[in-house]
Length: 357
Image 1 (cartoon, rainbow, N blue to C red):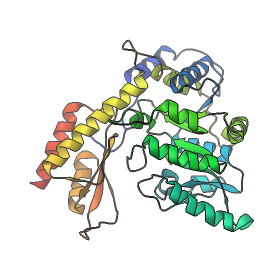
Image 2: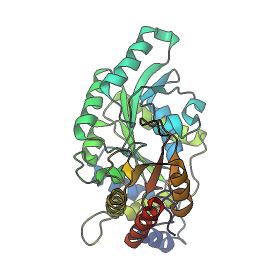
Image 3: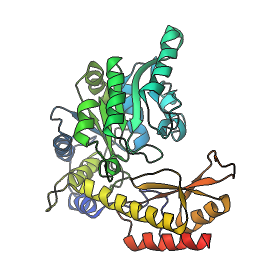
């Protein structure tokens, strides 16, 4: 049966794969200095409305976070982030391994708030040089638990960071899902205008691998990051010899289709639609949502034994969380992708319903 484990189990979307095949025999310079990477960067700058932005490519999300955080901060600084932000729970100390300490708040659902950030900021400021100095804020859209940021939430944390001279970085591994979610009022041009840097995830949105890292030269931190990034990329072992492959893939995803829409957004719309369909069916079958999510990740409270069976049958990942009811329930996550068939969603709901019967 179709698995809902993640959004990168399949290979590449048709447009992306066709472009890779079509350009396969080309000879190009290495390390991202080719015409495809240059064209992809132009297309991305146009799509986000920032003609002066710096665009580079990294092979994966963790290394993109390492590069962005290292470039935007000094060695004695670190990013303020929510307690359940991706780098704090899923990157095995990658940021700390590169000499940057994560400064986590107690904010929930990965939504960094000015109130939570201010508490961490004050503690660090009070101890002066004896404590890691905040240099930036980190947030992801969607969050680790599928929350889609609202414009009001985003503007609030940006205003707070700007007032303190902190850089703003948005991890966009699932940015496409967030931008195309039902009811979303925060668009990519607004993020691009207010963030110092952000990523556009390819790995989780129709590409074989790759993330685009976009840096806005609006601030001193941003301009310095642009200068530092090539050196940091090489030092991190992330300067890919066949970097042109990422350029080819992003070039295809950001070239408008006949209907005028970029395939990059089309992929995510499909994934979101499948996730919404799955969530509706699961609720009708008797499952309780862990939270209301409009992106391509959906979460449900389940008994441990049901979670295990959902994992075996449908690839749902199970997480241990505090159950406010005291019943010891766990949370099962379902993820849809650009390639998820609609009938697979219906079959998954039927299978899940049988487990509760």
